[in-house]
Image (tube, rainbow, N blue to C red; front, side):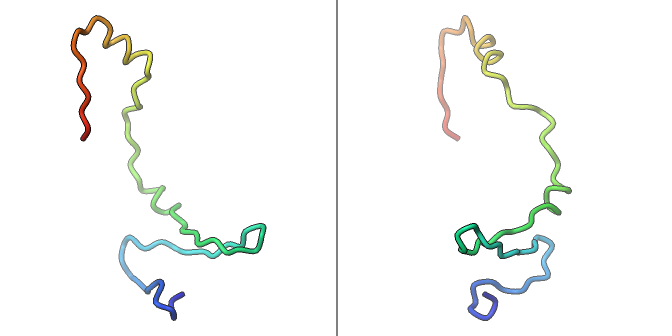
Length: 69
């Protein structure tokens, strides 16, 4: 792949190891090992709101809007 120009060498901080894994039917899957990135990723400390709590908070409201951000 390197010789074909599909991938290139890099020394950047955001480079991750690549592995070629053979599937059951003989095809090859291109996989990237992101475990090092997962170790340094800061997790969101706020969980997603639960739908029942959200609906309860909205009960009694007269006006609703939808925003696409």
